[in-house]
Length: 281
Ligand code: ADP
Image (cartoon, rainbow, N blue to C red):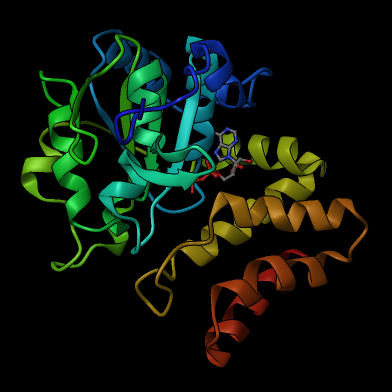
């Protein structure tokens, strides 16, 4: 009369329902920078795992959202952090009114039902996550649900995508060669001037002139990377500044708030950046 431990008493939800939240209904705006759309499509066609490399806020996440929409596939995104374990990705037994029940983690869900799984900043996650990623990202395309005693063969539509910021890497925190070599890689960076102006204007709602000034300020700040700044001023920050200006915040104030103060705590560096802002606004 007793159900085997761990078995699910309720029937699994139909595939369409389970991934409904992960489908992208409207086209996410993405301004193509190079040939990345075609390259990603070719990689997806053979379900090749892809690594998107580049600094924070340069368009990696937006690109994947756009590609998932373009390919008509659901997208399961996981923001990785230092406490993220293999179980968080794969799943675990949870106790509910019916007893213990297995819950697929985001990676298992994507592999089971055929989504694109995007592991953002995967290098941040615990080392044990590589153990589960490896068999999924080579010809085996399988995921071991060890605790459940199941070997999950990935759905034909499943693809694994990871992002990676080479700037942050130290010897202690880097992907292993055995992990890197499973992925094809696309290099992302801040777009060139004209393209970034277009993106900033579109996303923030400021006119092109104002967007161009913001992008010039960004370029100045990016030259200071390695000379007191750890990371460049991202496209995301320029959009933030533009959005404040579009809400009638004075440009100088908007730039201080969205560009300079978040980027540095150092008083000298702040003055240098404030001066750069003043030459444009
Ligand atoms: P990350 O590289 O950190 O994943 P995002 O993809 O979140 O960065 O990009 C930050 C913001 O910059 C996006 O929300 C989007 O508004 C904008 N953006 C950057 N690049 C592009 C692009 N090529 N096309 C459209 N929007 C972009």
